[in-house]
Length: 371
Image 1 (tube, one colour):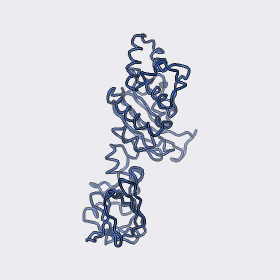
Image 2: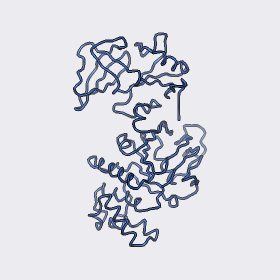
Image 3: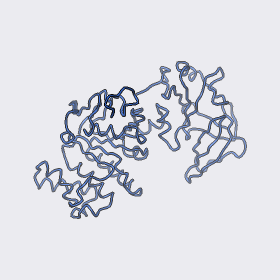
Image 4: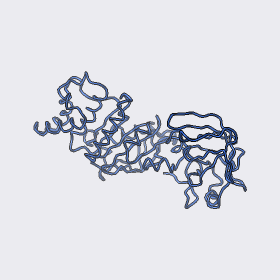
């Protein structure tokens, strides 16, 4: 296992990059601690696969360095980094048996056959491949082949980390949850540093202890799934995490409070103080659909709204309302009644977030915080 540290790391595929738009990875500093289970999450094109390939050595960064346990590895080949990488499509030898595929990395290292046999059978048992060890790989299902790819990394005792590049892409949806659970069990058993690239927040949340969410070549937030959900420090985090994502309402300040497209949202003294330092920035109010309260009864802090439509998804409902010029999503329990005439919203203060130029305003300094 290894601690993987990125120092002032940046990368551009352009020969002579001149502008920030020329960079696939913007300058960053980041640490993957030894033995951690991490997800690198983000939409297509955000740079997550490029970053993973820099760690593995398939791509050499334009600037900065990658270190394993304090040793710079920029000039060290992929093979010598002792990294196991599992790709979207299984990389195995179809003409070999399952046993020989798993044994191949150890035979290359000249390990004794008795030790190879013990390790292969141990890993095959964990991955539920024991019954097919003597079968040729070319006749196996996609999920069985992907298990072999994973196993080829697990058989080695010298692996610094295992990197997964969207490994469940070709797997039948009904089997994905089993493989995710299996990966989690493997991590708990071997305590190997694992970095898992995905665009699927469910995969990231069920596998990782911490998630690095990428957007336009930057890690915009790094934290537990709960931290990203409850306290997104960038509007993209709020939008990308959750189903549906956070409601993000452009706002301006007035003497009465926050103006939200024709509706005034009252601010308390703490919120006013928070926003004063950012009044010259583009301001956004954010609140998750789960935390918006919908009622037929009005109170002092209620905001009048108009119900547009309701989606009944079985275990919960998504209600869309208009608040002034803004469309708001609300997630309600299945049994909760929806107003049929007058409807009002409440935004509980503890769940209201304010953003300046897309970054969360720090509650103690009144400034936007960025990575």
